[in-house]
Image (cartoon, protein in one colour):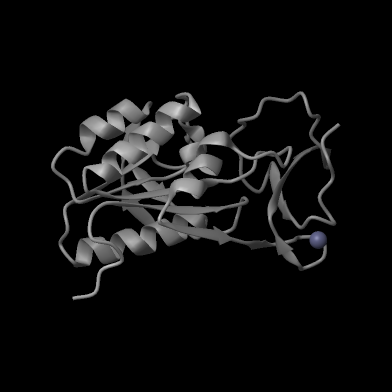
Length: 193
Ligand SMILES: [Zn+2]
């Protein structure tokens, strides 16, 4: 039998907006369900774009999920399971060290831990929890979108206000979709000022 690792592991699925992170998370969790492994998907309560009891990709695929406010709730809800997934990790409000310690603890206990989230905020700065997990994970997949300006691979999430780059002093987290964000490449990304 081939297995990616003997015990627990952390897998990070990251990238910019519209890169298909949730789609990939759903794909992996469907395989887990087909294999009848015990599993649960968690989604931060802050993400209110879609139904709170599901994770849904932009393309409309859905998976049942437990809404949580903190990594503590994830740990409590992971008792006895083989696989857990956290979508939109950047929305968890705990300190990055707590999120990382929580994921490490679960993997050390033998769980397969899938996390999906933005690697950069709209200012093109790393989200600390995801950045640290990328270093600690057994597997990292950085997905790309396509730049709406030039068609190159996009790695950055451009937040727009009335068609212009949002200012650098705006809140880091603003929930939005195509109304607020565009995927852009390095060359087409406009820095927040
Ligand atoms: Zn571009």
